[in-house]
Image (cartoon, rainbow, N blue to C red; front, side, top):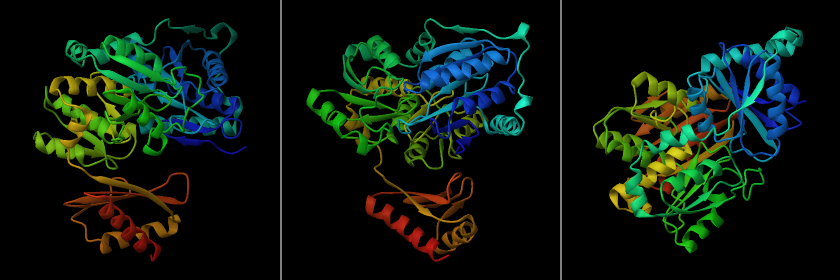
Length: 452
């Protein structure tokens, strides 16, 4: 059997190959063994493998002597809010995010309602490895201490209340906007419908049954959303919102059905937040320069983190950030929960439209335009260090950062090179004022690296 892909915040793999009930049980036990006292919450996205995987995980939680509180299908950020609302010791979301249908996974939450930070995740991984070596060390409860399995009747209300508290509900209701949501048979449709109803929108939800029967490839990127864009344009919608299967990412289509990109989602939310408050902004080092532009425009501090939601949240906490997010369509509003959140994205973008009276295309036109290119190439670890040095010396950057891989910055663009954690690959991301300039940065970097 192949090994699942394991990160500090969880694991994922192909069902029946890398991810089996046995693997899920072992990982759940390792997680429970690191938690303080209290119930463990469990939920899932809409994937077809979710029910049996959840049953296996629930059995492990109960067998460890804990209460397993099952929320059934909820968005990932909803689980984060629920941890706080119900005072749980931690939680597991069964989801493979945007991966193809054959995949599933487990995302871990700590008692503060956020995805577990790296130090905690490393302890879970060490415990998992130990159980692989010696399954007899599993901390199974004696018969008199076996846990129980319970459920929550409405796990969505607390999340809905928190999101609504961040926007001017009456102003949005007065606009009576027509909204299309593409939940693509993931977990987001349930709360998205309740949210838009509360905001007085006329709306339609595509893929509103969370059964994992994806209508298109699940990642909400340009090449997967052409049919959704046509529906927005033909249906007279003011905006189209596209969620990934666990609804922590949000892509936006403007009133013409044009895909404006996930990079704009947290930026538009930050624009609205800065209309009320001032405070530091945080994004990761692979996200667009638009966040830095906003910070400079409003004279607030700006910070970059390593790539990864847990790293962004760590940076937000360190600098007491007003707002954070990742360019993969993940706004993080500390007033709601320190988790990427498509519900926050939808509500606050509608709030921005209501407050300004502008369409999505007009709001986007007010921001600087950049082109971002993402690429990768095969490179062994032995050649990586030499390649990085060639980039540093050969590309004449204004500044060089080694926070996460190596990032080269110029006045009008940047290039990031990061090694893959799971494959002999390096990933390259470049952003510049136009596509030709971004492609030139990528090609120059690949040429230097191939000759290292």
